[in-house]
Length: 288
Image 1 (spheres, rainbow, N blue to C red):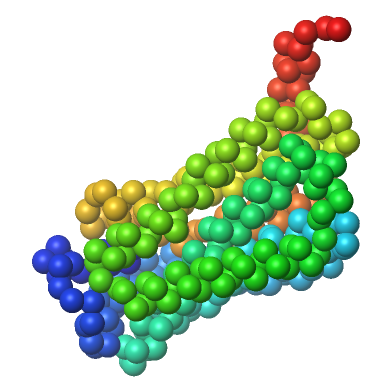
Image 2 (image 1 turned 60 degrees about the horizontal axis):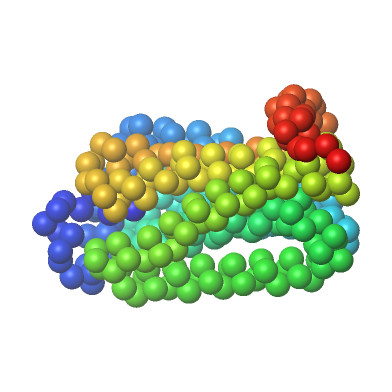
């Protein structure tokens, strides 16, 4: 993704470049005034708010309310990205340090994408299979899934570090970052179809679930998907820089998930949309 600063001729070269080359290439990106200013804003706003959101969600975790666990892990991956951004903008003199934090950043990025999938899957099960899910949702199960996500994305990060050539990178990114897109769409569509049949789920909970699914899909579509498309299909330096900036806004966008996890005013904003859809479903259903 951030390989945009390599020109097209260097993309076919061997992946074992020196640390000084990495340092010079990364400086070419982070020296851009727009990029540095945006990163300062993201870190300045995102870091304290993410810490506060993690603490607030941790206090809401109960044996019968495990949904915040996935959001907490998502915010932890965002926290990892924010810390790497701090290192990036400080531009350490040792190119090896820059390189290490470069890969840690993408480890956090991959992790955040898959925790978004976990959040959507968990919300999907609440609506589509409420009874089945009610008897199987436990803190232990959620923790196991979280550990699996961290391990799988760590393996992805190691592969990216070991096989960091241009061709291999074009394989790793699609394999790990494109599958979440159809999954997120499937979870949203399936949830919308099953809304009226989920009688055991309260109406306000249904609205929050739909809001979370829509928000997760929007975050992925608007912030992640352009970067993947530009990197795999289009090679244009300006578009690539813009798509990279979009990705850096993901820690701020993820904070809205904390808002949707809390009961309150957000229910009023979602009530009309969801209620209208449910009313249409009831009208179209044949009477017995």
